[in-house]
Image 1 (cartoon, helix red, strand yellow):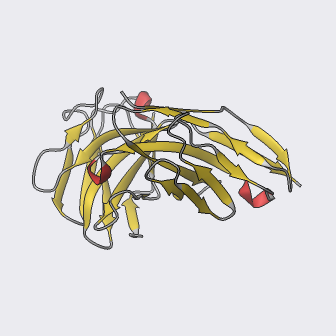
Image 2: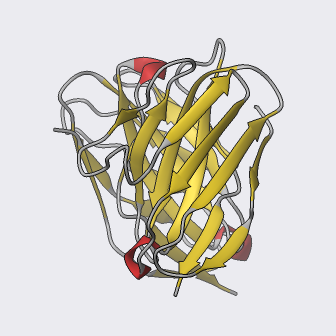
Length: 113
Length: 115
């Protein structure tokens, strides 16, 4: 089956630190990969995506590159802000629009001023 | 992206009762899904709501417990039947827009507490 493994939190960093949240996956087919973010008290938002190998998704200073050889999609940001404090979910979808998402367990990120 | 609303936003229900959650989208969408997020956990797909036909359920979820309707391309309901405290979760509606087959957007969720 399909599964997503991401580093467990909470991850606590100081403002302006470099962020990496690891995500690896297993999939029965060729997946599309996503990062979603859930800010405190808010709904789930799509942060970025990549649909094929070597694609780089980016948004709001966050980046992730689809690495087929290592089955990974690690989330990175060069300089985090307090406002980046949230729960981040890595997810995959196999087969396009007709299929639902398989999520990782989520990583709680806390940025301290 | 589509604007998705859910009703109710939260509810507290007694054991053994049922609750119907509504999901309304401001545009016609190709696919609609229902997810559950248990306290402190990740999201789990319950089912795909198919327009005009029976929903497709994931392993571990059954129609008798979670009946779903989707009468048109902008609306769906999920009923949580014969509730127990283990059903306390956030239930989320999600959609895929026409022409955006990879991007899935989520509603604000319905926070259900069963006592």
